[in-house]
Image (spheres, helix red, strand yellow):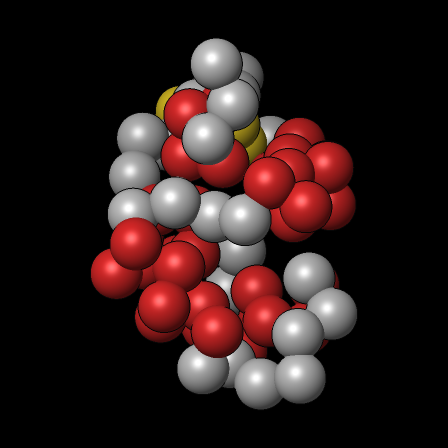
Amino acid sequence: MTKQLSTIDEVIEELGGFKAVAELTNKASASAVPMWKSRKRFPAKTYTVMKSALNAIGATAPDDLWGMP
């Protein structure tokens, strides 16, 4: 059964927190991740890697969290 996530906070938590998400998306520091949270959207360029990581742990999130229709 797939775990349905619906918010940026849930995605970040499920993927291991700010530092883990920064490493997953190849960001130099975890400081970028809180900016995404405040913007209420992940950068589109992180879509594939983050969706794959969520899929690998049995979770999913709506595409609109990345600005996808």
